[in-house]
Image 1 (tube, rainbow, N blue to C red):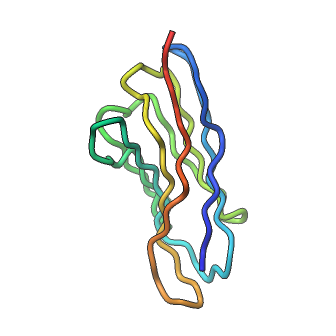
Image 2 (cartoon, helix red, strand yellow; image 1 turned 60 degrees about the vertical axis):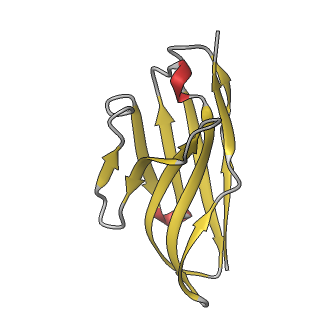
Length: 119
């Protein structure tokens, strides 16, 4: 089993920055892609950014140039640096990873962390 613990959410004014962290723990054999999703009230969950095991990254058009995903493989941790935040970035942000454990290869979700962008 793999557990994901997120941190770093909060409230910030428009134009501000936040850094989210997501640490994976448990009986991990290997972690493949790690990604961030978000879900705003009344909307579907959407992919924000993804980091593959080979180091490739991809972003939603709405966050390109403002958000940066990175990972520390030694710590099984993925980060999301969010700059120039806008009110429309307000959402619950979820970490997701595909990982191999003693149970095989599965997808795992974090508990979510609230990000609120408001003046």
